[in-house]
Image (tube, rainbow, N blue to C red; front, side, top):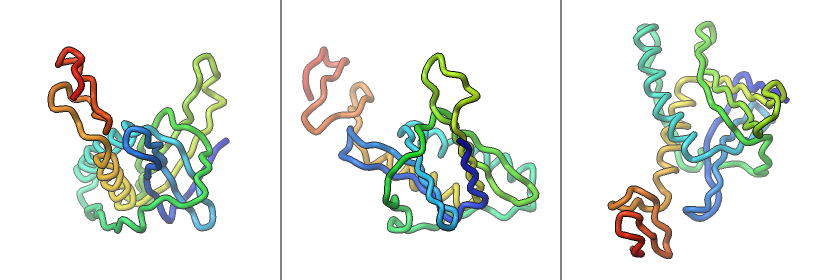
Length: 172
């Protein structure tokens, strides 16, 4: 399957469930068409980091472009029901279309080992630079709301406690 939302009218990331057991989503809308994709927390974080460098490089290549802004409220970034994902994302990529001044967020389906890559679903989400910046900043805020990090080993700590490998397995 191929999904082409050109242009998106809204895009966000979100999570459902308690910290440590959350399921993350990428969701976009074009008029009445709603597309929901399953993503990993690390994919949201990597996209946010990569986007800032991508926007910096675009600004150097096209100095006449206005700066991408990030204006959003928590309410407008909430996921929409139904949460019926089209596929689980294996790869995320960004491209720039100069004539329309749009970023194209390309999401490719995660393939099981041994599957042909030609059968993977792909979604292309055509967004303004500001839409993607808002989505990424919201995504970082969202991922930082997770479990606290152990100061000893850097791993997330569950509310029930944490077996830290650096303290010989003693529970914190």
